[in-house]
Image (tube, rainbow, N blue to C red; front, top):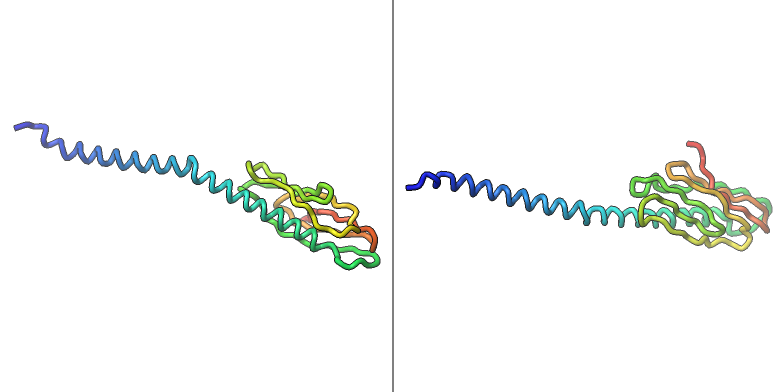
Length: 151
């Protein structure tokens, strides 16, 4: 008889454990190397699109639809504090809002649907601040300003 037969169960169990650990390492590497970061980037992109859309709606809703004498409107806008865990900014560029973010794949612009009597849109919003839209002017000419309000 051979003395090495007593080692066979120990070697078999060691090989089984090695194969299971190799499988777990392979699955973990696959998920964290490709699937999870891709899903996070997609989620950040969706949040960015929604934030930009909400900002445009907030600006458009602040402009009175009926022209009148002197107009002063202040409206608050609520946006997420971060996108993809990073701060961002929304700035006015003519009659368009532009989202600036350090997160790859997050950004874009949204044209504003404003009445012809709006002559200018200016200002920048930085995430994490209290945000407002201020509309001023008379019945013929309105200016829209993006402002940050101290909390």
